Structure formats: C-alpha cells, structure tokens
Image (tube, rainbow over all chains, first blue to last red; front, side, top):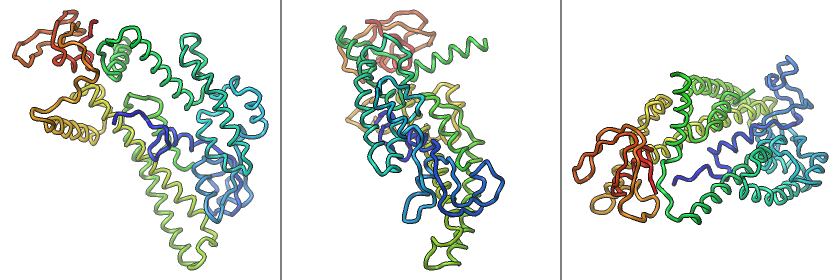
Length: 201
Length: 198
C-alpha cells in the first residue's frame, strides 16, 4: 500500500510526464491553421507543411498517431548513429545524465520512430553493460559518491534501492535486533526545520 | 507552448520527494483557464469541421489544428490530475509516519481541500483499526517484529506529560531515560520523540 512511485509508466507517473515533455524534432506534413505560435522563429499565423520544429514528445506522439499523420517524427540526436557509436564503444564510460535525464524512458518512446531496431538494441545494450557497473556502485557506495551523478533517473533509482537494501542487510548481519527508528519523513522534516531555525533565529 | 504551466506544477513536485511544496493555487488556476480556453476553441473548430465535411472529417483544413488542440487539453488535464494525485499520495504516507496530527509548518503548505481529505482519511483509518478483532488493532504498531516486551528509550525533546495505558503519568523531559513497554512507546519513536537505545 505504501509503495514508492512504481516504475511502470502510469497515467499519474511524474517520471513519465517529465519524460514525455522532452523536445523531439519533427516535420509538419500538413498545414495547421492558427498554430503559428508553435514556431517561435516566425510571426506567421498559420503553420505551413514542411516546417521543421522541436515539439514536446507528448504532442509529437499524439500528432503522429493514427491513419493521418500531421507530423513526421524524427529521432532526437542522442539516439542517432553518432551517439549510438559512443554507447557501443563503452557504455559505462558515458555520462548518461548529460545525454538525457530519462534516457531509457524517452528511448522506449522514440524507438518506434526508427524503422530498424537500432535504437531498441542500443537501449538494451546500454542497460545490460551498465547494470553490472550500477550494482557494483550500490554495493560499494562509500568509494566515490560523485559517480552516481552520471546515472540517468532509472539507474539512479536502481542505485538507491540497491544501496538501501545493502545497508539493511549489513545492519541485519551485524546485529539482528535493529532498533526502532523515527519515520523517514519525520527525520527529514526535523532536519529542514533545523536549517530554517538557524537561518531565521 | 501548450501545457507549459501544467508541467511546471509537475516539476515542482519532482524537485522535492517526501516533502510537500506549498500548494500552488495560482498556477493551478492558470492551468484551468488554459484548459477552458483551449476547450472553447476546440468546440468552435470541431463544429466547423463537422459541418463542412460530414463524411471525411479529417480532410478538413482545420483538422490538424483540432487534433493538436485536443491533445493539449488532454495533456493539461493529465498534469493537473497527476499533481493532485501525487500530493495526496505523499499526504497519505504522512498519516502513517507523523500520526494523525501534522506539524504546523506542513499544514500551512496544504490546500483546504487537502486538509479536509486528511481529516477524512484519518477518520476512516481510525474507524477501520477499531473494527479489526474484538478490541481493535493499531496498525501503526509492531511494524518490525518485537524482540522484547520492554525497551529502553531516551527522550529527545521536552514533550510534557504522557499517560500510559495503566494510568501512570510520566513527565517526559529532554535527555531523560525510561524503561517502558514497547507497545506504549513505539508510536512516539516513529514520531521522533524517543530514541530507542539498544
């Protein structure tokens, strides 16, 4: 009942909403009257067919669905050939956070824009190669805390839960009678308050 | 750009996990106006499209505009619902962790509807707990398997008087130590009044 945010993208998922907010390049196939404001570079009222724009993914997905496509979606540059080569070379060396915060979520949406399965394969390849590295990090988090800045959101969540599980296991192994503790929210709340008190006292 | 404001609401939530940012009444209102405007526009466009071409509706020149407009409405609604839903979810967790009385500074961040929801949730929660078994069951107790009946605790703040279930009244002062039945003090430990000493 008190589960944390589930990973499965659902209607209310914050991560999914933020991932579908990412800008994706696309090309208009039809004229769209009165939609000129979507294109910040012109003052025209109507949007002509053939205009190339970067629109949020949710709009691109909706507009390219169905029998009659309004826009033709294109791959964002981080999933194109050049970047795929980088990932193929050594996925663990990449700063995925800089690529995109929601690398995998975004990827699983845009992979359908490419007929061949290249994006699909590279997502899988990246995850598999990096998973070992994340597991290693989670088990030895003390070594260098800055490494986790290079993870994308999904990986970061994996890292966190892995790290918590590891600490729990350690305390249980050391002394099985774990002490009762204040609830998480309560402790955090108090920490914040202390800062506020210091500032405004 | 469509739905930009609605997305800002979501961004606000995602920035602070486990903490509720102040309820953003203004932004919510602005998003509602945007939805209304878009909806009105869509209704007009829809009427035109329906009138001009009864058979092949999607051949109309306005059809792309209509589709973009309707998807913007959907997006706005989704963001708005997600904003409220996720706030309630955090609020529910707070009932379990803080207990039925929220600290004042958290309460100021809530909207009046959220406060009402919290009281209602607390009430049904309490009702459910009393309905279990003969004497009711406190679901907030024994979240971890107990090892002993009595535990030693240290009081972390000047709490004041605290009545045990047998009628004894304890005066809880900062840094005082007590040896109490586990079931009596578990809730105070969760609330951060006591510290469990092993």
